[in-house]
Length: 136
Image (cartoon, rainbow, N blue to C red):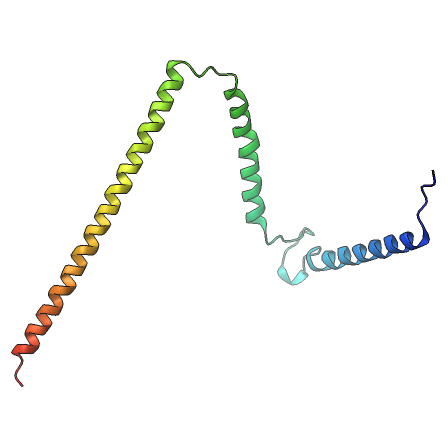
């Protein structure tokens, strides 16, 4: 079995390699070196995405360092026991409390809007009455 490439394929691969090398050198020239005018003494590049990288690394570590082992261990914990039932009841109760709180906030917001509308209407009536009493 012949594993050599035809000349056209070799030329194409060579062109792709050259283009990738040129792109890498352009990227290196824009991000690779720290300009001396910035006052940074180290030769490390300044990353504009430091915060995003930190956030990604933190979430990744939390995901695979904490959540993954917890979910693996969860498979081995029996679910028909008082501890699990208590956790399930607590979660249900917390969800109901959250729904009640959201309902109260929604009702308060609706009441506030109605009182604002009434005060606008009262202000319009007062302005109308003041205009009627004004001397002509």
